[in-house]
Image (cartoon, rainbow over all chains, first blue to last red; front, side, top):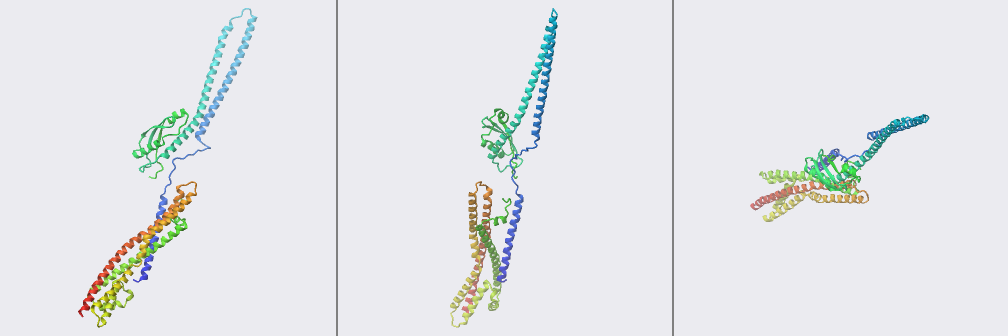
Length: 250
Length: 225
């Protein structure tokens, strides 16, 4: 074997080794890139402005309430007109009778008989009117309540979103966390937003995971809550949190 | 930003100094692999020849005939054959001078063989120093490239308002490719160096043993006369 031949063979082998390594690297790199899964966001906020069936339904309900109220008002006006007309008629009748009485020497005690009848009719009318008004007031209150409920819902959602954001920020999941785990925590707050207690409603089965969720709530400590006491009492005095690691790869 | 940073992007997007470092390391790696293969072949060849020659030498063949056969093909001779030839040549030359003391003859023969041995040693160890150099310095060269690349990427980071991981990460990734290449060049070189120097050591011990044996044979023949 001559010296030059051995060199040529060595060069060939060296080039072969290097090209092999480069090819291996390139192939592996591609596989890695394909395996890469994008981390899903924690939640998606989307609002459809044009066609929200929920909102249109609410709007329809409001419109219907308005219509009903208008109808009721019309009815009441009609009733009132009727009542006035009847009263006028009755007065005219009364005046005619009085005239008749004046014409007659001895006036019969008809007014006394007629009087209670008239009284009862006015009573009935006023009663009906009161009832109408009450109904109306109830309707108006209901409508206002509906309107308020929309905004309250939105507010509660906004506050809940804020709370969720804060907790997620403080949440460091243990390496043993897996997709599909779920631990439900019950949180008790005072009106200032401070957490007074947190308990596990439903464990995920993984103690480390539960502990991490508890720790996230404890670390957050103080939550953003509405200053409206009613809203607070209804939604935030005691609420349930669901911890679910959806964005993990495993 | 490119979502999947391919290896070619890593090399092509690097700064010029990092690219230079990478090119240097690639060449060093290539050359060191050439050396590794060449040395591997050469050392294996020398060992095989030595075994063959020793078998021939101890087979009881006439040493004069053996010398004549080898003297004709000087270019093909390796290791033990060279030592044997130089020793035998010196012995026969010295023996031709009538009035020479046998001890002086032996001194001459031993000197000639020592020279041949050192020449063989030199020949065996060619390229091993290169492997040693690549093995010890290429991690540092790669590290230099990495430090330079990271320095640059942090300098770039200083000018950005929103410092995020995705701003620094590609630069650091590029820079780390240089260290990876340095290690890639260094590891085989170090392994080959250690392995081949051990093999050379074994061969030289064998040569020395042969030299002693051969000189004792020559001593006996010279003092018999």
